[in-house]
Image (cartoon, rainbow, N blue to C red):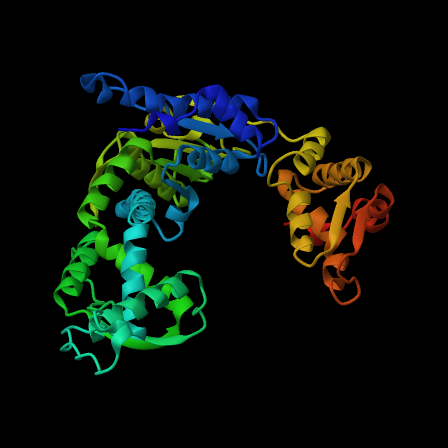
Length: 467
């Protein structure tokens, strides 16, 4: 069952999204409700759980307004498997039904990785203990049989009543001393020889007629499991050996059948699939036609059973897509949402129109989000011990220039800020650390922004700045 502690209330979800995405409150509210409904469904009566289906969302808005970022952050907040696909890729070389199913297989792969990481964390202490023992065995091999006790020397009166140490006891005492040294990192640089498992390669590369990708993967996995495991000796430092061996030992402690079962359930109950550029598979006329339109409509018809709810075969087992949340997005400059086939339109009942970004939005995007570009550049230069700072006037000017360039050339939304910031700071990034040394402080002012970027607005041939 979904853990209620991981699921925030709709208001809390919007507050989390606000930390990274400026504006678009309508979109945030709708995805927050959709996410909370996951928790509500899992706490409904068992007979109703099967009946409650997610309200898939269609986001409509120009590029760079935050559609993808909303979906990605949503999955991160929910600790849910997340996959982003571009609908247009299914039209590249015709369309094949099982190609569309690949997005569900990718989702299960994501879920397996998430569950495996969680399980590894649970057995980390136990695995670390096993790794310590392996490293100790390489440094000081244990004594298996106790050596006979040595009789005390004649005249050794002060220890007359004390039995001498056996080789095994001495070995154990030495090993405990070295164990402490290993834990404290005192021996990290010492080289030892370890055995590393190598995955056997079944060497099958030809697909038989009628065999799909899943069957091929299952056969390779089966033959790979039958082949003997190869071990290769490597001489590495203790620090490196600890990393290599920790993964191996943790993998031995994890029950992969349990991981697969949990991952399938996680993908089914909380998976999010984001289908971008869905407008590219809509026919502008809305009535199909010939040539590319046939392929586009074919992709829509292949998407339909996945979104409606169907069983997809993966190498980890069969997954049902009934309760996966699908979020589709597109600019819809040429085609309209109504140009999608009616059956697919019906599977995206919630429609959200995202607003184009204003000059004020650009200013806030530069200043407030946790991942703001200004904070990213400050962190990059801080690694060279150079302090970078922006005042409010400089941020307002940057926002104004980005907005003007978007208005005059092509509106690429917040992505324009990457162009503007790169143009502004490229010379500084090049001069550090050769000309601008450590402990320097660079204050970005309105005058500096005007001096370096005004030609972007004045120059009408702005093609070199279009991303």
